[in-house]
Image (cartoon, rainbow, N blue to C red; front, side):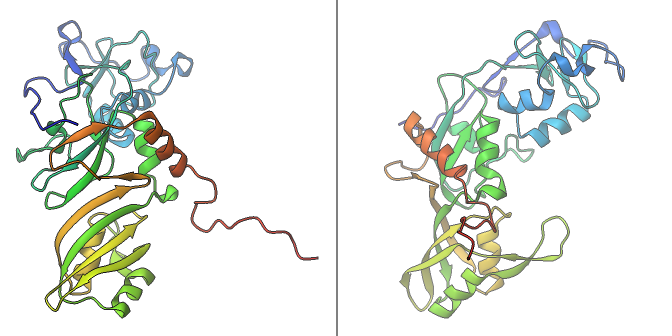
Length: 301
């Protein structure tokens, strides 16, 4: 278990400066170079995501904007393939450690910290609380908003992050929330049936629901609930409760899949054990969890 400390500001963890392959190198022209050869190895964005640079989609955006170089050559378009064993990959002049060991830590994120990899507003980042001895660059698996606290996973393993956050895997996440007003059994049933919320991208109404809701303590002016989510929509809990005139006063995530917050205190973190990682991967990829999939039954004679 570790108490919070800050990383150096000049070089992000998991990166090293690389003067030999600086931004002064000439850009690669479309179709030129060995990086258009699919036999070279895996796709560039996949290697970057596995090294913990960002999600695969965010890595694709970095490549498209010209921030990525391989062996000093600027990659300005996709697809591109690399050999991580021999190629030097840099992003904005900083070298990506493609051979970094996989790391996954559990952090008790306090309120007041954001989960983004970089923040133009200069707010405190959750990743700065983890000074991991391997110096790898970590990113958050999903997010907790700035006003929320609780269990947050940080990793450099893009495959694990994808497994845990892909909506088809329905990994349960458990939250203790306190809302304004008194929530009764009828409201619980409505939350479990689902309500319509505007889609983040299209703005069109789309159903949103809690997998389960339990009243922990009900008072006239506030109610404490334990809710389970298997969806991953942006600020879903806060938006659902606000839509029903019960705005959230406090939100804390206490579990993700088989992992529980338990003895950590705000700002503390620890590495996941091999056993915990095994259970986490197993639960996320368990057969029959896909929505709409039913168990096999013998046909009627």
